[in-house]
Length: 347
Length: 288
Image 1 (cartoon, rainbow over the protein chains, first blue to last red):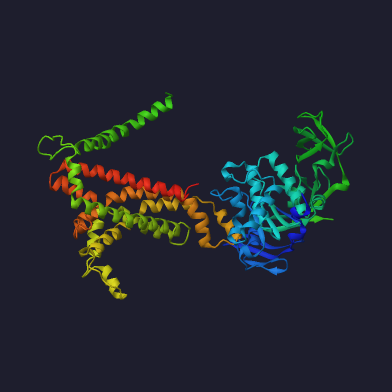
Image 2 (cartoon, rainbow over the protein chains, first blue to last red; image 1 turned 45 degrees about the vertical axis):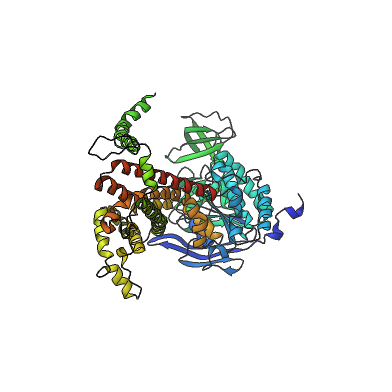
């Protein structure tokens, strides 16, 4: 393949996306509250949060499929808040793919260009090129119901690529795939993003996808932005109790100050499962109730003397059995403190 | 035979018996009577192809066939257009939508006879509301049932109202279509009309074909009541549809044998029309 065959940064100019004070209400329900977020050109930002956190609403407002109650949307410096979806230069991949069931994969890819009355020869060439890039070249004459879930997902992705947009919007594109396929597709999307260099906003409820895919992650809960930053930074220094509990699997141990993990009253102390180490001189005594041997690691769950539930991540082939008492040492440098009232991180 | 199949057969048996006794046997008898001089008064005698020869030279039959063809050509497309147009228009949830949907369905539950009597009044050239409306906006006021085409159009007008079943089928099918498809199309700049043409109609096509075939069968037959009440076949046999002519032959003139022959022809005409429809469906690649 020569350079001319490859879609590169050169022919897909990437755009900066800015959400400024976005708000969305449905009657009395606040779906999105004052969301401000900038996505740099070529960046992949993951919006992550539990269901009802407002992440999909934010994406749909960005796409123009829903109207914001307040705030502005800017794409490449242009205010597109009141601009029709197709004039925003964005392409979207839907959770259920939204492939036209009555059209072949080829016609699905060519749908947009045909609607825009682009020259047929150019459309054909672009469809073929994108299909080759995504390994769909043998499947173009099949209908969506003749394709596997993974293939449908690729067709959906390819349809967005044919658009050659300035911004990709992806709404949980992997959540309908089985676990193994999801892992492979995750890597493929990251690789594709690296190759195309197109600004991408990716919505997911899966914190593992957020950690592995994003240049930055933006954590949402209850319609509010909780924290935004590089995945590792968010993991290492969660801004509040919600982020601490949401990012990371198994989740961070959070115990009221003065309890098993130390700290003073009025605070909540958090320690990640991998920062609790079995140590005969350790201060915490854990009564093990569940042993999950995952092959590469073992997760121990149990409770300490004061009844706090704790999870510990240890090496493979742990000798522990339910009922055992294990003494644990806390890596004090990796102890997080949060205000018990506000949930905010304390220095 | 598995237990499930056996119980299915038991449950279906009453319908099978009913279909056999009420449809299959009379249909076969009709085919048999088509070759007799049956009058309902004397023992029917086999008379060969005499009925068919009579049919070939019967000007009333030719008028009746023409009336039926013209009626189907007008009624089926218009009824389908009305049902699918209203179905698509009222599928989206909107304030008060249920009242509009109920209003569209309502004429379907009115008995044919009542609707026909109502239309006798609606189409009255002197005091009927339709002509008063036309007059009010300065349009010509035809004498409807007194002219050939006025009568034909009048019957079709009446049959444009009982379309509730096709309306419901279109409504339900439209609601099954994934809303995301329209969002994806909107992102590609597809206009509402483009979405109708490129998404809705192709996805509705199988159902529309089914409804067209069904309505054809129906329309060839349900015109009996309006014709009987509104026009009695007139003026000048313009609305002497095949069912009406069959009725006249069988019960007015006691020509059961001849009526049976026309009934068989009506069946053949129906089958031919369905064949034509399906050929067009294949030719135009309506279905994938």
